[in-house]
Image 1 (tube, rainbow, N blue to C red):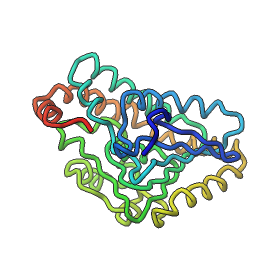
Image 2 (cartoon, one colour):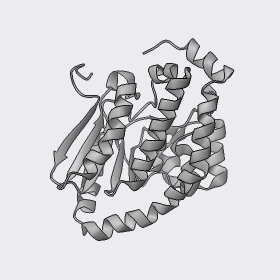
Image 3 (cartoon, one colour):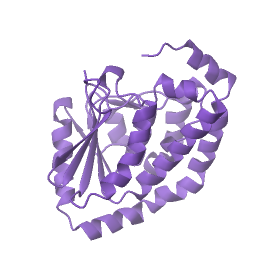
Amino acid sequence: MADHDEPEILVEAHGPVRLVTFNRPESRNATSVTMHHSFLSLWPQLAADPDARCVVVTGAGKAFSAGGDYEMMRLSLEPEGRWRNVDEARRLLVELVHFPLPIVAAVNGPAVGLGASFLAFSDFVVMADSAFIADPHISVGLVCGDGGVAWPLHVGLLRAKEMLLLGGRISADEAKAMGLANRIVPRTDVVDEAMAIAQRLAAQPAGALQDTKRALNMYLESSLAGPVGHSLMTERYSMASHEHHEFVNRQVAP
């Protein structure tokens, strides 16, 4: 368990690679309000690091990320909280789309909600063989407003509809077959494999690599103005829905 005095997001330098760790293992790395703020401000800081060439993102403990925590959900029940949460989500996706360095996701355990959405904006995904992906937005009364609606770019429209409308778990093997993961390894090897890939990416000519990433991310960028923009707007309205209020009020904060 993380020390309460430790940051909720850790950043370590390994030569040209920056290892970012979600550091709330006691809550399966669920995103708190302060953690969401930190995650948003992290990307400009990493982009400004003159010695960084690649970023690896993983989770402490047995989970990658359980998505937003109940504190964030409770804040979204009020109009001011809804506006703030959705605006931060929009700004985070913009930061990820425009982030110049390659991002390697080291998915050491479940990647749920925001954790799953993050994978759609990563450049390389290494998954533990015991990990899974799930997006339960609809089951808690919410429109899938962040990265999930970019999944058709990875898996095709019909599969994306199945993932989002049913909200079931996608195993590591299924994720690789669908195009959501590049490598499947034992959980104990996830970070090592991701770091090895990151070192290879960091050794590539930086200008050519970054401009190629920018060109490829134009597909994602086009979704920000269309489906992602629409889904974020409608997610804000769904935060005020009876179904979502019922779900949040039934929960006990972790």
